[in-house]
Image 1 (cartoon, chains in turn blue, orange):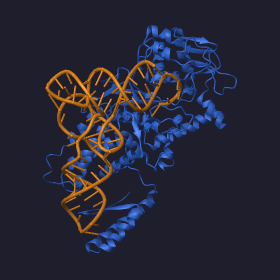
Image 2 (cartoon, chains in turn cyan, yellow):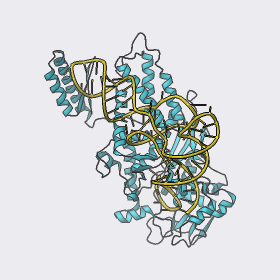
Image 3 (cartoon, helix red, strand yellow):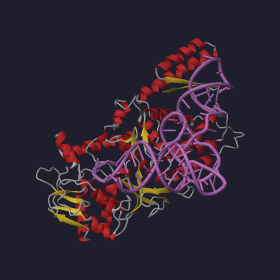
Image 4 (cartoon, helix red, strand yellow):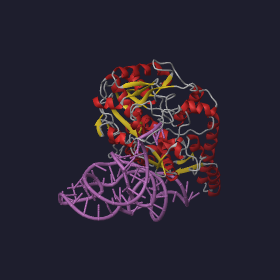
Amino acid sequence: MAEFPPLYIQNSLTRKKELFTPLNAPYVGMYVCGPTVYSNVHLGNVRTFLTFDVAYRYLSFLGYQVRYVRNITDVGHLTGDSDDGEDKIGKKARLENLEPMEIVQKYTNDFHDVMRVFNMKSPSIEPSATGHIVEQIEMIKAIVDRGYAYESNGSVYFNVRKYNEDHDYGALSGRKIDDLLNNTRSLDGQDEKNDPLDFALWKKADATHLMKWPSPWSEGFPGWHLECSVMSTKYLGTQFDIHGGGMDLKFPHHECEIAQNTGATGEAHSVRYWMHGNMLTVNGRKMAKSEGNGFTPEELITGNHALLERGYSPMTVRFFMLQGHYASTLDFSNEALQAAEKGLDRLMNAMNSLDTLPTAAIEPNAEVDIAGLGTRCSEAMGDDFNTPILISVLFDAVKLVNSIASDRIHIDATQKDALTTLLGGYVHDVLGIESEAPTAAGSQEDEAGALLDLLVELRGNAKSNKDWGTADTIRDALNGLGISIKDSKDGSTWERD
RNA sequence: GGUCCGAUGGCCGAGUGGCUAGGCUCAGCUCUGCAAAAGCUGCUACAGCGGUUCGAAUCCGCUUCGGACCUCCA
């Protein structure tokens, strides 16, 4: 690890960029709030998971052994904060006429498909809320024992005011409890709570409720915020390194999480670095289902959506998102996607030409500095995972590769290896960018490739005979099939558009 | 209403006191039978007003516009 520059992370809790020092190097614990599986994920969700996928990849790249925990929320997420708020899963089950666990399975499968399509690494552990009901009940007991929660009509609520006397409720989100109180809207059906600020740890279920479990207080279900406190503690301990999630979870979800953990143990902040990914916007507004401006990855790929001029590949979208920093809002537009598509194409062409790069036995250019490129790459990532800067350095490498390929610059075999390792490491391992394989099956692809090679060879012969008509006929016909020909001094090559 | 954040060239998007971000687009040139690809060159911007400073896109103040959170949200 010594050869890499230090890693700095913007910590939402302290609002400072801090040197990252793991609690127990070389181990790193990272918890990320996963999806509530009651509907298809949209592109905005994808952005957050991409942010932490890259963090996971880079930490691993640095040599850390990362335990990456990302939960599945399959119970407890209510449609509103009032007492008659319905569980999102239960509601969807009613609407789709399915068992709640069928809903959970259906959308969990969808989520995993999407993660795969965008080349996200699987987390080390993917726990679900329903699998940890016992632990959640235990944590509620601990919080009650410490006096920070109370029972009311079979439900249990967290006592925010009492907690705030001993600790700082609002430390993460920068809120003052009195401001919160003054600005809390009056919601119906909050009679059970002593204070509008209090939030549910356990909710008593009515007779029609589909998902419920026995507890010391009632047949019911856990509150939404509780699962993350419980599962992060169970798999990463009461203190761990990184906690991530979307910006919109900062309050109240993460604030409540801190309160629960602190309330249950008496120990202050259990998370050392809080990271929050910013929102994907459309025409300046947050992409959200309620706005009707969200689209699913499938719509994105097919282009079958009013906002999309045409389809874009998952890698194009991945690359597009990585060209912005995770902490900034990123505005979606067709123009930006198309620009990213071309840029990615240029990057991947350079990657593909690495194998055939010529190496000169003599006089490699002195100014070629592969190690320097590598330093700039790791410095960029070390500065709060600054992928846009990393990509700008990678394009310098692309320029170098192209110059070598066209004999303008010479390198030796050692430098070629270093360049190949560098690009492979940052493009594939860190950024998770892969070439998008043609859809054709392998053997057919081989056959087609052989035919294309033959056509290119025939065209080469025609060119040698200055038979431009034949040469252009072949080129134009292939262009019509979506295959372009590139001529160079050493001959011609083909590639699919 | 409260809290916080943002405004960068034709477009997207980094950068936070002096030094070329990068990608895409556009124009010219080189190479090439032509084209494509590639390379080179050019287009050199920081919402407005005021202040601090030898020097500000970058710090401070005000103004305008936009957004997020405060309710479920990645």
